[in-house]
Image (cartoon, rainbow, N blue to C red; front, side, top):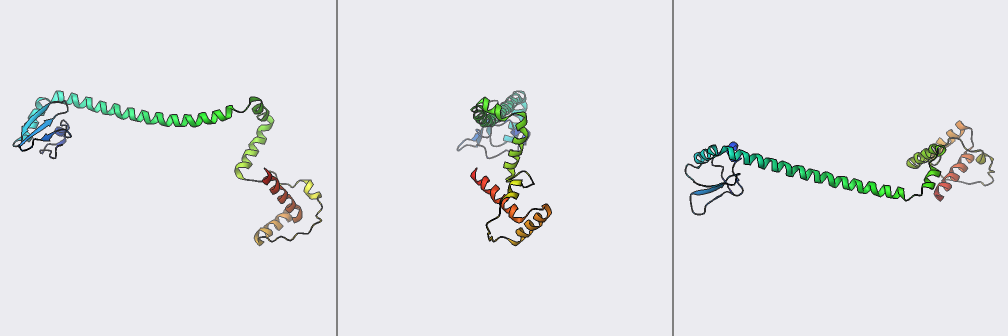
Length: 194
């Protein structure tokens, strides 16, 4: 490998294979390998002028070789990029195929039963509630909870701020705290059984 540029600018250095060119051991000469495959030996004294003259004399074949090398590099880079895109596509396809396989394993009759026009709105609400973690999707308490007898007195310790909010809410909606508590506890228990 060459450690020297011999004072040549990049317009000339681009035609030299610096990786494979070398200085001859014990001699004041260099074996320079050009990108077109030609090998020339140059004396250390006056090497800059000699290399420039050689390149100018053979510029046409050197430029053709340089263009071929650049095209080859571009093709290699493009092939690597395409390979990378193909790998990404294969991974995405694999995930997609897994999801499709799972979906295809569900019997058609079962899917048709659930995905009817009437059920779409219900399914959307269920999915929305499941994602949000909401226990209920309606703001009114069913009559069933109003009619329950509150025959057991229970002492519950709770956060004062939450209790005050519940008390204000019970006044706003016209329900007793006992009715709201029965409703919340029952909804919680139903949710835990799922």
